[in-house]
Amino acid sequence: MKPAVSIIVPVYNGEKTLERCVDSVLKQEYKDFELFLINDGSSDKTREICERYAAADDRVLVIHKENSGVSESRNMAIAQAHGKYLQFLDCDDWITPDATALFVRTATEQQCDMVISQFYRVIGEHVSQKGAIDEDGLMDRSTYANHMMQKPADFYYGVLWNKFYKRSIITEHRLRMDQSISWCEDFMFNLEYVRHTQTIYAMKVPVYYYVK
Image (tube, rainbow, N blue to C red; front, side):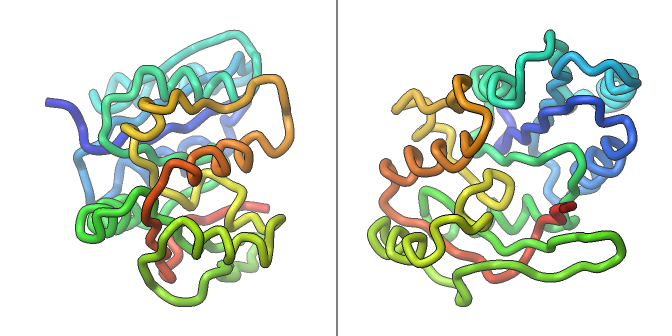
């Protein structure tokens, strides 16, 4: 049986934060997922931590590779993913216990091509809620683009980790992270993805903790 969701976490020297990140995934209320941990040539204890999780839970899949950057790490996982949906995390962040459940429920009930959520920004002990679209709602691609044009540089639109993607769109249109650039590659991926969507749903609820 293929999992419904493939969760992708690239890791480089993440020994100090990786366990918090992975634990937040494995404690999800929604259980039908596979978790890719892509060790990008780490020189710390990342390899050992990844292997420990893989040995304890067969949903955890580990890829070890030479250091070549986050884009290739994500691309390798995308190529091996089985889920109907893709969800991304960074290894120094974490998600709420209901994050994947909310994404799946919204994508299923709304029959949309992408879900976007608000998030928490964490600076030391200070946590604040961030977002750009202030109301829950389904919109077409043009409406979403109009929102994005108002704040084109906003993290809310540019990053991967507050969004939920249909793997079929990524596969059909052969979408990948551009490995030739090291800045805004996630924003470029999102622009390409949105081109192939019909409807997008914005969730006002935050599900992701982003550590600045």
